[in-house]
Length: 331
Image (cartoon, rainbow, N blue to C red; front, side, top):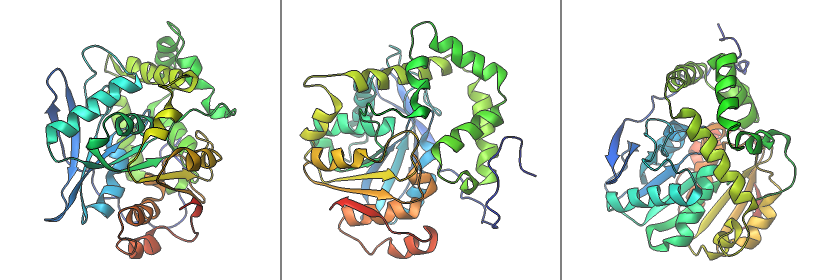
């Protein structure tokens, strides 16, 4: 039976999803972050994955499974999300989050890493790569939250949530009046092109996780603080602006947009193709905001091209990504 508010099933019988990768708390001196790991082969190079707003390290489970023969994959929970406590200073700016992730890379001591970020995590990864180029070997961005002032109806809530003294109250009211299953379903409907692809077992687990987060005193502050950080980045001008950071990136870069993304306009692909010096930019058909979850095999296939092993993930892409070809913007 499908839970109330859950996305409708696709009508096909899918295998049970793999379990999420195990994790541990890693001390960074002043604070801790939770990191999940999927070990690779003997010669695997390190890779680090950074989730988006309202996400967690669990967003990378399937992609890490595809990449781990070649990459030693780790996914971090940003401060205040997943199983990571907030930073002691309560900061959620892009610069503060970038400092945390950069500290993790240094702590692990295996850099430079293949760095991948989605949405908010994409903005964080651009900041890291532009500021500390020695930490990053390649950069992959999936629907990066870089400034774009074209109106998107699903983005209206972010400036509202970011309002001082108003945002936290709205978040708490929403949590109090809407059951967890409806809130999870709303996020999936926003982030997926086809919500029916989301596995029932994962849906139930995310409902349980959201119910758990509702009891955390800092949960609303983390969401509001991150929404405020994104709003500030969209309005920032001058040498610290996000697109200027993109122009400073020298690492080989892959930028992936979803054709049906409701949050990041895929038309931004054109600007990305001009901004990044050494980039392959593609638009995935029938894909929403979280391509790594909705089309993990297609993302792995594109990352194989970036890594110089274009055929390594090809078979898995053909078997699991379904029909359709990527639309290259610039190779």
